[in-house]
Image (tube, rainbow, N blue to C red; front, side):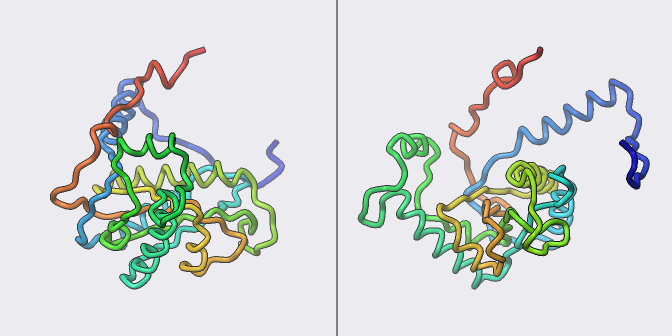
Length: 228
């Protein structure tokens, strides 16, 4: 098994009580996380975004190829262009462009309780958009040729760690996934072997920010876990 270079692995030793306390502290903090759709334009230090992306970059991933790229958009002009393109796709999704909606009636019904629509002002208001790309090829050298593995799983874990870190830093986030998202590749100057996964909107909530009451309904532990 160990016919390759290794380095020691260690963790800070904790008592059971310390371990339980830490787990519960993180749980209680993350339970306060809410998807925000109302952002202020208050500035956010670039160093916070950098640290969160560095945290995301430590996520477990297939063959250590780290198949992700995070394009950070701060330019007002670029944010405006992304908003315009995203809203065009959203109008087609909701059927607000004169044609039948792309989404099924069941899907649209599920979204009504969240109050979403094709208008996405947060794409311009928030100070940062982090556009997440999954690298289907590239390897650790990003050569565009080497096959990557478990790409969706790897990028999904990295996004979760990114969101958690930003929340711990006191920032609000929103995952936005217009469909299709090909325009993001061109907007961010990324190669054809990268697939846009989401826009993560990052910033401070506006003073009048609110969340749908429906969003507070979370499945209990007994429903999301089983002990075998």
